[in-house]
Image (tube, rainbow, N blue to C red; front, side, top):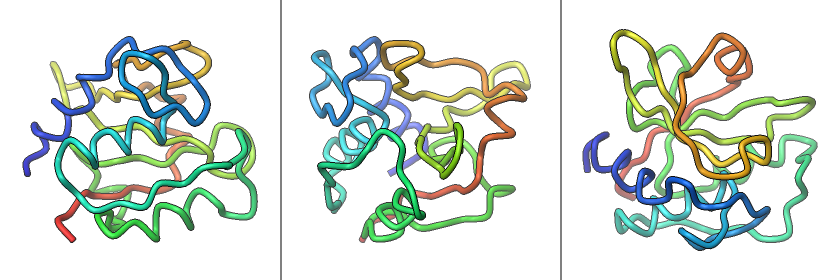
Length: 141
């Protein structure tokens, strides 16, 4: 499994409409749904979660990610193409995005957001970079 394999799996979901707790490429998904899709596509072990709120609290998102058998926490400074970034949009970290590598010296991410209304790929700009609170790497469990 290479970073390119992970990115290719995420790109299969491009333009899928945003749907909180959605898990169906082409029909509806949220940021966690994008992660679940990549786990499935790459044949990795995972534990799916349902019933989570749009605004996680008390470290809920980190606890879920830390319990994933196929994710390993890494230092943010080491995050690169194919790694997952956890972001704080308001209070507690509540968002996951895939680092999609670099193009002409600029980093990109793939993620599903209610703001965009779908799965998108765009530059990891200063605002999004400032929101990153943690990073994870996919591993074979």
